[in-house]
Structure formats: structure tokens, C-alpha cells
Image (cartoon, rainbow, N blue to C red; front, side):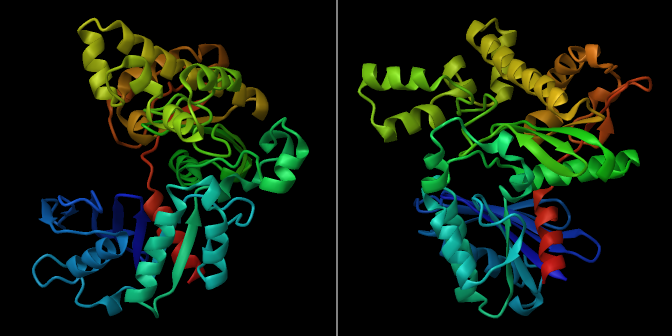
Length: 396
């Protein structure tokens, strides 16, 4: 079955065309700068070379249309007609408590996704735009929604509730939902396949660390706690997101700086994290380069970033009653060798031993713990699109 996987954002659309029978990626690429005059579509050819098309795309609907036209293009395309696309799988960021698993999209599902707009104002509207674009262009093709939050719906109330007045949960659904669920689900399962272990009998801590970052505690195949909350702002320090912060500090800054809700949102989501502390960049490559030049703020930002990761691993080991597997994934987790080493060496008290030679790999599946380690530590590149394709194939 040929499945088109779409991840529609506010200014971008990422796509992959996947044959679910052999898990082969037939085409992939993305549209960037939607709504701007210099929007473009970049793509990777089957031989690995890359191409780019510059075309004006005022909305995601035009972006999706251009993706479909590229897939069927006589020169650059990989299919002869739209008829070869048998299903479309969409990443949908927030499902609140409405969705604890992936679902076939119906008008009722779309309405529920729209009800989640207040807690995901940047993401869910863009996700719905992608769904509606496919409905108008390929009206007879079944569509599936795969939710970032669904995997974490197995968390117990003691983990997901905030110590706010209970009516905040009853009236507005204010609780911790967690995100990156598709990634955490994929890498935890793949880690067990890679190690030859039974997924349903492991205590796993998955570290999806990159510009956006979260850590999840998984016991017997189920998420029992995760670092992100009602929104993706809670938890780890991220590229531009603050992560855990005293809410009293935010109230204080509101009073001192005269910030309204929009101002606070911008502060904690766009101006904080690695970029805010370093006053330099949210990109770890820039941070590492600056550290080599003696930049103290860049050094502090990296130390804070790694400290939060270490602290959450320790907390989740306690939650799980021990840990069997630790997984690194995401842009930093898959590629930043030094960060993995510093974290692993500080986990010696848990019985983690470190394989320095294996850790030299970037972006590859590899076990970086030593043969005598009491905990398996592995790097598993995430593949959310493949997970979405598998869910879509199963449902359709």
C-alpha cells in the first residue's frame, strides 16, 4: 500500500511517500516558508540527489497540491497518478483526552481536533488545513490521524494531574498530555527489536532530545510519565523553550516588564531555552563552536541543557523502580557524541558502563553501553513517518 504521510505546520509541510508492504520510502521532501513570496519545495530523488522548486504557496492547501503534483511529475515524480496513493496519514499534535490511539478521519474527528485548538493554537489548525486539503484534492482517499499525545494517554492521574484547583481540569482539561508520542513509541519498540528483548517486559527511558526535547518513562510497553505537559513548553530546556520554570518567576516578569499573555507566551516559547541563555543560537552546532572559542554563556547553556536531561533520567529511574534500557534519539540524541558521553558517564551509579568506540557513530542504530553494563544504552534514529504509515496501513 502506498501511503502519503503529511506533517503540516504553520509555515511548512513535510512529506514522505511510503510503501507499507516493504517499508520503502519512495519519495520525501518538504515545503518551507508557506505564505511568503520566497516559498519553495525541496525534495530528495530516489538516487539520493536533491532538488528544489520555487513557487508561491500562500496556504498549506497550495503546498499540498504542489507536493502531489511533484509526486506525479513526468520527470521528477515516482507515481503515474494520484490513484496510486491509497491512504494519507497525518501527524496531529494535540488530541487532549479525546484520542488515545490513531483513528480514521471523519467529519466528527475533525471537529474534535478543532476543539483542541486552544491548547495547540499553532499546530492543530495547520494539521486540519492539511486534512482539508487532501479531502478537496483526493476526496475518496481514506485519511488517518496519528496524535502526538495519544501514546501518553496511559499515564496515571497522579502523573498527569497538576496541583491546581480540580475544576481547572474539569472545566478546561488542564492536565499534562505530553508530546513526541509517535517518536517515543517508535524508538522504544525499535530499541527492543534491536536488542532482541520483549517490549512488554522492559523499563525504558526514551530521550527525544533536539531543538524540541522530551523524556518518557515506559513500563511494560506503556507510557507512565513524560516531561512535556499541557503544552510542549514544560520539562527539558529546549532550543527556544524554557522548560520547567517557577510560575512565580513568570508572574514577576509580567509585572516588571508589563507583559500580557501573548508576551509571556513569546518569552517562554521563542526567546528562552538554549538561545535565551546563550544569547547566541538555538543550534547546538553553533553552541559547541562558541564553547571552543571560550564563550561562557554558550558553555552555561549546554551545561543546563544536559543537566536537565540527567535529572529527568534519574527521576524516571525512580518512577520505574529501575531501568533496563535508555534510548537516545532526536537531532542531539542521534548526533551529539559529547552530550551522550557526558550523560552516560554520570549514570555509572546506576550500573551504566560506556563504550567510547561505539559512541563515535552518528545517526545510526548502535548500543553505546559496555558489555558489562547493567543498563542497555542505545541510539535509535527516530522515524515518526514510518510509525504513522504503519498505523495508517493497519487502520485502512
